[in-house]
Length: 174
Image 1 (tube, one colour):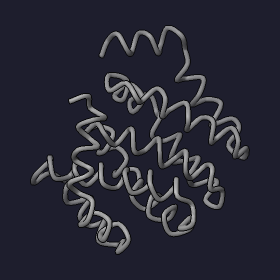
Image 2 (cartoon, rainbow, N blue to C red):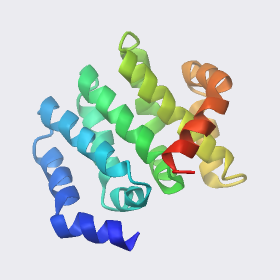
Image 3 (cartoon, rainbow, N blue to C red):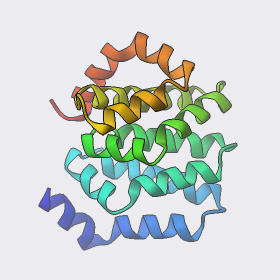
């Protein structure tokens, strides 16, 4: 919304977060903190589009790519992607930027981290629901091709799709 965009832009928070993440890419702590900030900002549904438009999704994905072995970065990244994927625009952007592959990698590499498992699976479920809502679009075909690569995601989606729909409704404030 215009109000959210004005607030975020007025205070300059989002651009500073993204710039800090880019400038301090080697710091896992900065990346995790940046992902937490993106999650916090994206908890307001009206802010999600602004975050996606200003590069928040790219910043989170870059953090996850840079620190694949760091469970804190992966957990915070999965949580941010889960929140961003609650919007159709965020879901589309996440899939097109390779988010499903990163989520699957995080789930596999951090199989003993409950937070990564929870938020990674929630993000994938949110992406799946978004793909179902976009019948016969390139996004849905992209999701189908990518998601076939992960048995882990497929098994979770079959069992949890109903729960993810409820989760998305709550996130969207419905």
